[in-house]
Length: 76
Image (cartoon, rainbow, N blue to C red; front, top):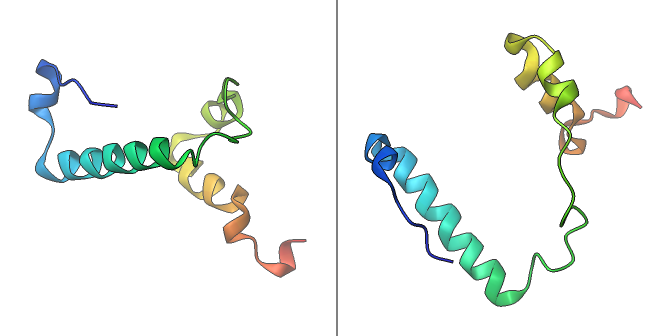
């Protein structure tokens, strides 16, 4: 998978290019190892309705709390 850059890519900062490059490398490696072949979300659309209904200043906090990695035992 090779990324094709357009005129808008010229506006990217160096750190944005670095992240994009790292993601491209990860995707190429995942394709080779077939890591994403059993992805449960493959072919499904993502539902962002609840995300965009919440106030913008709270979205990052809500998202962090909904991720299982961040659940504190007292939240169960």
